[in-house]
Length: 180
Image (cartoon, rainbow, N blue to C red; front, side, top):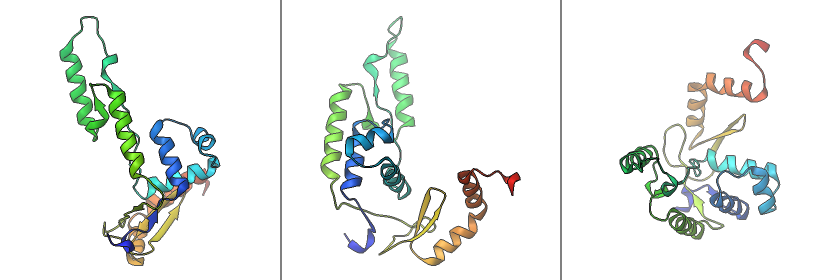
């Protein structure tokens, strides 16, 4: 891999936050802070950074289909529900009917082995989807960061989404459009 291609590397703080989230993605930031010994604002900032660079895409529910039951034990309804959920969730491995807890623990264990300090994350340009070599050009507004390969892409993004950016800034600052 080209080391210039990956401007963001995971450090000990990122790794401990990710491992805590892997145990339970519904944890409040304050609980993650207590578990990791990292301040809550730092946990929030690091989580948002991992989301902004696209490393954390979302937190998905894990279903235990063995807990489903109906009055007439309708297995067709159970199978239909499983198929429907499988379509709506990208990661099929997160939905299982066979011993979901052991599969989930195995998956978490595999992910935890792969996530270590120094792991580099590939970041692509938010405007042209091209690779970012070296240090990215960053556009910050509200609590959002966007990453670009060059000043031209950063400028193009700013021009194209100027209205949205300004609207997000106003909402973040608590201002309404009438206040201005």
